Length: 130
Image (tube, rainbow, N blue to C red):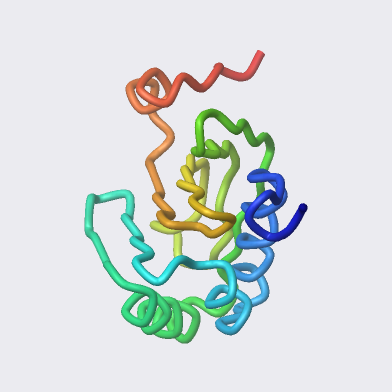
């Protein structure tokens, strides 16, 4: 039996990002676990689906042009690691970035943003671009 729980984790992460880029709160809600956690690049944590959706609403209002561009995705043991960059008129939000998404039961249980540094690349086992 196939269903949402058996969905390809990388495809799920692409859909999640499409919702971020489209400022689609309802879409994010459908893809998040009830205990979803968001962790920003400075280690700030928002826990709970409702709290995360409220945070996304505020973020989208503050930065309506923000979007993520993915260059590569790697799935390993329930975690999808993404290499890419963010585009935004706010310079502190634009530039190279790394993300991880923890997938559980066909839902995104955690979305984490990292600064793209050699140390983080090593921690996440991300290959440097050739």
